[in-house]
Length: 331
Ligand code: SF4
Ligand code: SF4
Image (cartoon, rainbow, N blue to C red):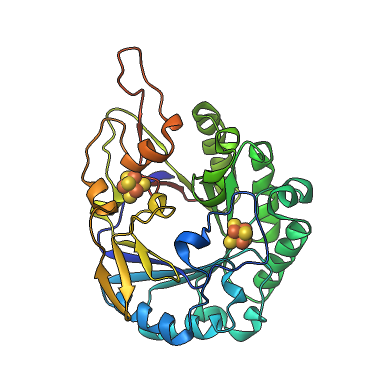
């Protein structure tokens, strides 16, 4: 059954980049050390910052990110600390290299998901984007995680470089025992914002023709699938997650954003200073969230205006949804 997952008002979602270093150098990597810092946060800082969000809402979820979070020598202790603090769900997004024997250092009940990243259904395509050997290592990591009893999900970032291989993913995922599939659209952050993004972004029609069909096929094989809604019909309501949801994108330099499209700019609305969460000086992303435009998302219009098509009378053909608005299909 397909449904649009609207923003939860009762949950606080913490996207915690505990370091920015990584062993890979993916073509579309959104990490931008100038804006995000290059520190590896000490465990004590991770715990202090997590505590700020642990009881903020009825439900708090945390996703540990990097860089590659398993490069952090204390990731296992950060996971255990988050569990003790009562986070409802704990996820680690990994490129699959699983450093520091992370599978041996935590138990499956201490974490909800290991979320792996592949950008191709074959080594040829994936490794062209993510680096030599990364396909085989990631697939091996998934198999080891599943065999050890962990729940796994997979993120596939769609671009014109790998759109053709998306249809091969449902069979691969079923074979690997992955339970959830997240299809992402290439975003204009980090490297993809600095280079040839207009060449790699998928056209609206291709997105609408291909993604929902692959999602439906994946669900038919027993997985839950999530993908961004991207385009809104005129009658569908537009909402900015920055105004109605409780998401925090935290970086090692202390910047805290409410909108992922703002992460390439000094537009964060919050920051950690002396381990206290404070409001950042205006003008910042929070001022942009308030602007009401006929194209939908203000940041999309500012940073990727080529996503918008106009009719002859100058009105937009569709609104662009908040990048955090998702469609979900359950088996
Ligand atoms: S694995 Fe993630 S953090 Fe590392 S280079 Fe690739 S996209 Fe960037
Ligand atoms: S992506 Fe657009 S709509 Fe979503 S939080 Fe950012 S500015 Fe708001």
